[in-house]
Image 1 (cartoon, protein in one colour):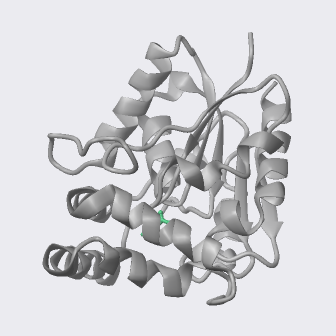
Image 2 (image 1 turned 135 degrees about the vertical axis):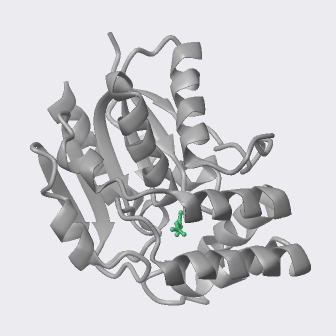
Length: 246
Ligand code: MLT
């Protein structure tokens, strides 16, 4: 049976986040990189904002694709969804990768910040969300690499106002899933940029060892956008995890 790898993108992006990672995944692995509902070409769910709904939808996707268990890798928001999937659909998980992500819930300040952003996006449109991210997602604001910033801008635009606001509220409502990571009984890989200004590397170094079979791929020069800033290092971390899951 072929190993399956489910790649879940972050906010406010879409499947294109993984474009430079997918060709570097070990041959013979079946890779799924869907647009998460509300992003790219996928419609916003008709239900109240909830990452659990998205996790359930990803388990249904595996069923539709006749995949029993998959290695699930989520970048940032995708990692929050992967942890919800690990909690609710443990039997579907062969391994877990948190890419530039974390198991913690939002602080009160972070939650307020998301709700302020929802109001701004309702007033000014989705480009406000893209513009807010560009300044902080890369290791350093790098004006000379417009192709990198374009993925942030076009991701926000393709999600649109409703997709952005739904996801912001869903992330604000998520619970702490530290215990999911601490009790994980499949191999896990934390893949993280040493210069991440959204989730500091010091945090990642701590939770990376929580799972009984947890490892850390630290990408010293990358910021939060590891799949864009260093796709080869991200693919290498994923391939290491896939080998441990085989
Ligand atoms: C992401 O990259 O998905 C976001 O930074 C996640 C978040 O806002 O917590």
